[in-house]
Image (cartoon, rainbow, N blue to C red):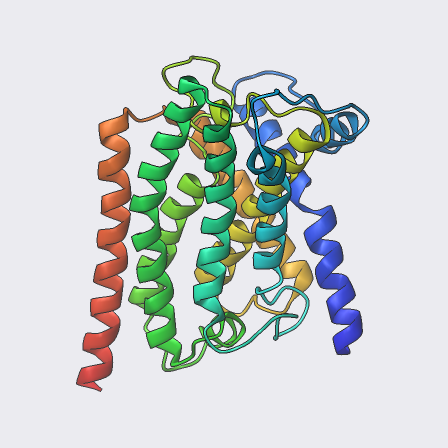
Length: 304
């Protein structure tokens, strides 16, 4: 597959597949609960319905509120261009792009929080405060996991890292620990149970959902679509780490991402949302796993 065709396939995967993962999670949860549940393609219909509506803005908000959804979507979509989906090299691959990947996720999250604070609502401010606390605890786990993979492969580009995890020199225990840390990061980044409940309507437990209460129409569609894209790219990253050799194989990576979505649906069906103090302990534990993985890799490399 030449570079142009690979780029087209890459963009098509990023554009078309993300809402499907949300539909898979919904169907798994409905099946586990013995319900019929929403159709598999319901997320696509919800986004299309929101795009046909108009947006309503308060007279008190500024450009920050208006720009929040667009920046959030642009940042996660750009992060998706750093992953090797359709070929062994991503469309935006370069040395050190793993740092940009992490900070693009942080940029989208920051503008979502800033838009919530811009409304002047103490309720949305509470959600933004919790989101900031959770992200501050999740980012060390993400960076430690990525650092472990970089040390394991000796590369600083996500394309080279994910493509080199199946090499004989890779440290399997460290890779598995990194996958475990990334699993916790995935749940935190995507506001999934046990970190957050995307379907909750209880005021004191809402985190992500409370930050987007004032958004409507196309703005809410962009937020929902950005959430789906973030779930897709984090699921793809986890699948590529947990099963080395998937990088650059679009069908296998798509199947891996769908498999991760199925696991997320099962986890949400059999677990409850953690209390806020327990969420902090959960994310600190994920960082500990990342630290152990990095130490294991460095010790193995030093012994060799």
